[in-house]
Length: 114
Length: 111
Image 1 (cartoon, one colour):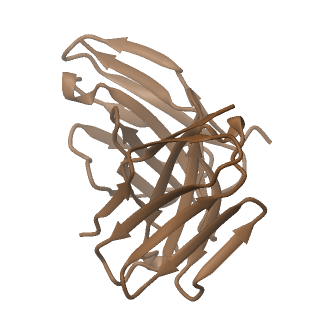
Image 2: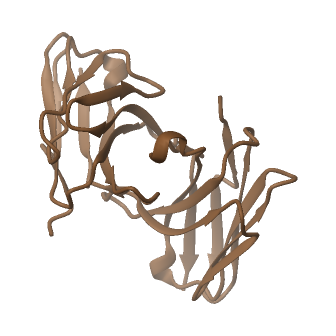
């Protein structure tokens, strides 16, 4: 089955710096790759996603890149702010039958220091 | 919309007890999911449902049961609780598109 590996497990940056989190997946049939942000005591919230027919997607300070050949995708956060501090999860899915079963990475704890 | 709501927020069970975790969504989503999140780990799918009356197993279904009698509700039943079921449980729902909306979670401790 699908396996998703995520690195690093923890990341500490200074406010204003960029942060990059990387994930690799094993199943070449996966075609949907979301990123979730989880704040303390809350459920995960989708922040950006990408489908396999595009290589990059941006939303303000957040971007995701996908390399299908290498089977990896990355989250880029620019101009980090303290409120970006959270745990970030990547996931992958093949979306069979119109619904999707997400396989999650283990998460990255991002700390942004003022 | 309240989105996805879960009750209770916290629960302590003794080994061998049973309980039901409640999940309700008011977005009229067909698809609903139950995940567990162990410390330092990602979320693992327990069960999912593609509509009322239809459920199927995910990655880690052992020790759990679900039912889906309405579009809104998707309860998760734990029978004979074991320490290995100590975890945070998240319910999620999604429309026909890909995005899943998560509830706030239930923190369960089995001692």
